[in-house]
Amino acid sequence: MEKLILFVDDSPTMRSSVSFCLRNAGYRVTEAEDGQDGLVKLQSIKDEGESVALIITDINMPKMDGIAFILKVKETDSKFVPILVLTTEAEKSMIEKGRAAGASGWLLKPFQSEQLLWAVKKVVWPK
Ligand SMILES: [Mg+2]
Image (cartoon, rainbow, N blue to C red; front, side, top):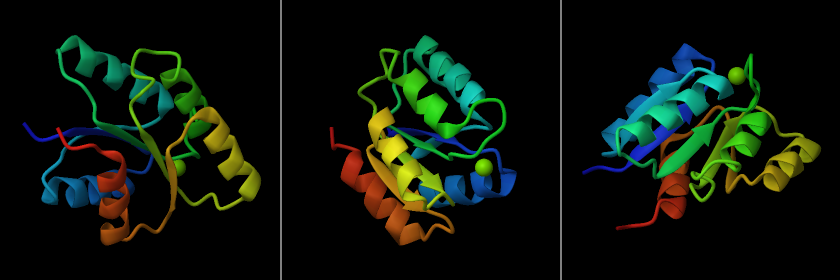
């Protein structure tokens, strides 16, 4: 079965364009609209006996931002799932925060399909 990616972003436009790009490349995608929703989706994927190969998350989101979300994921048994950040945040201190929280990579919006897929392939291990 194709690898499952959890994509977390509060912008519906981003969710549909990134999901389209990933699905086109053969991945399955579950979308979440903020960090809180991301944790719920992560749990329900687990409850279905599935596992997420990769998480891609935005930083600026209502309810729970990307940094808080990453820190929460690292407290669960999904802590070894690689996490890519996809954001408009280019501030060095924010990138350092992401790295310290446990992000595996940092990509800037607007995203380029090829660049995104390259980063995804780099952190998603073959079976
Ligand atoms: Mg956002």
